[in-house]
Image (cartoon, rainbow, N blue to C red):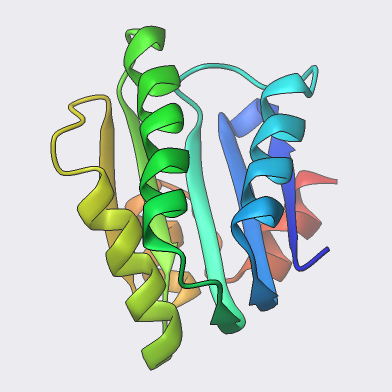
Length: 139
């Protein structure tokens, strides 16, 4: 699957990584697996790495339906969550922009877009400057 995640419960953080061509079904499957994971907790900060994303399914109606379901889950949690997208390429910035706009009226989500791992990690309060360093420190 071109989408995977890793929860770092001691940091209150989940790292999501997209690669290749992403579909809405990929995102729905990963979202379901994430909320079913025993380390899932409402309000976890999210770092969404789109560095390796090469393309995406352009079904905007299904995308908005998916985001509406996620917005409801976030809103029902009663906790605000910071979501930072790493989007260094034109295609990743386009997708991150879609996500960002979908959160416009959702007070429970504070979305941001950054171009580098270091910038994203800094916004999330992590001392590491790369995801490799973050994962090494978490082991």
